[in-house]
Amino acid sequence: MKTVESKYLGGLRTSSVHLKSKNTYHTDAPIDNNGKGETFSPTDTVATALGACMMTVMAIAGEKKGFDMSGMHLATEKVMSANPRRIAALKVDFYWDDCPLNDEQKEWIKEIGLNCPVALSLHPELKQEISFHF
Image (tube, rainbow, N blue to C red; front, side):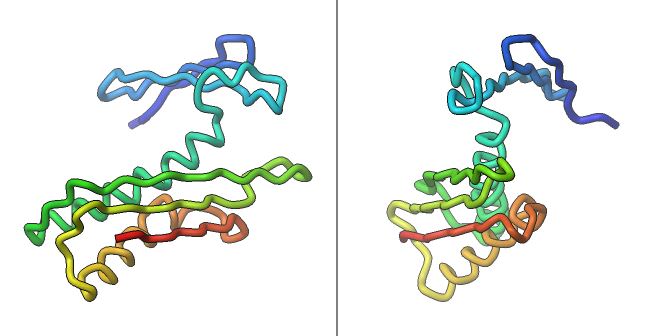
């Protein structure tokens, strides 16, 4: 079963539809690559996917143990290389305000996030620099 359908709209913009929910999003080429930069670029969606996946699997695991997972948030910096043009690094600063976990539990939840499906799917040459701030 297909998950997403995407189409090119012209002007270096695409539109994608999540088939089950019918939610949509657009991408633009970034300004430094001939685009308008009015929304996420395709590589921005990769950066977004890493952080979202980390928090999702951490929440799944934590909530199963009865932890209140609210307060998690992060910021991601995407670093591009020029030749070849690709994502060279994703630098994630993960924060958890009022984290209720003890040190052992924090190490456990970090491992869950670091081994999320997106993290494990990215090419090994793409540096994932993850910093946790509890």
